[in-house]
Image 1: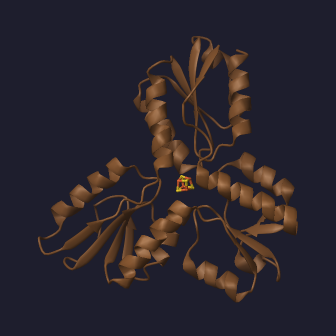
Image 2 (image 1 turned 180 degrees about the vertical axis):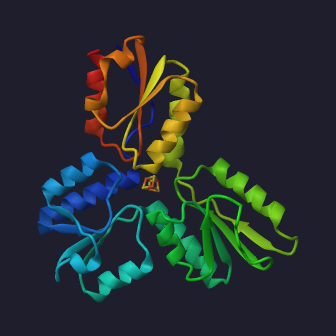
Image 3 (image 1 turned 30 degrees about the vertical axis):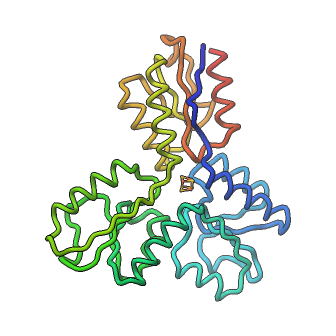
Length: 279
Ligand code: SF4
């Protein structure tokens, strides 16, 4: 079986940086606590657990004097304040691109501009963004039911994993609902990394018979990548590891395209690639 890799796949810069920071911290401190998964991938979490990373259920479950790491998604400000109040040692692995988006929301708040966040209000990154605006923000993925000030100063930003095209479409619909006196500033806070993976997958799909997407179903960007591959019309398989590759599923193919979400580590991708090549 010929296996063709997408030109861009796997760990993004923010996840690679966060994992490296955690590994370095465990080398120095032994045990490091987190309050959320560092990345949405069980293989990475298992590897970090072996090195001394403990996923705590709450801040109160972390012992005094311990080291706590924020994830690449960042964290709500009250949580960071709680860590500081406990005088725990804080390792901030927030991705710089997420930190930029947080700054935009904080600047909106400082200039009394109400922020609309185009994103999943329950996602950790978005909860962190919202916390930078106090009460002056709302997060949504749909225009239906959106309640915002009918006039005045508004700012629109996006969860970093949204595409610029989706943000522009949302901004277009939003402008259509606003009256002419509303001052809306749109800041593109999307991250180029997931988009690069989507584009590379579309290109890859043109030259193969079927596609394999490697990653965890709990990862939003990997689910989006899977959707992009399905849109190509080529048979698409979503696998978490090489163990999920079933030979009969691939019997009809001789040329397979391989891609992976931004939270999928290199060694999992390589294991899937080897397994496919053996078919
Ligand atoms: S996808 Fe982009 S914003 Fe998210 S962690 Fe990776 S580099 Fe940072």
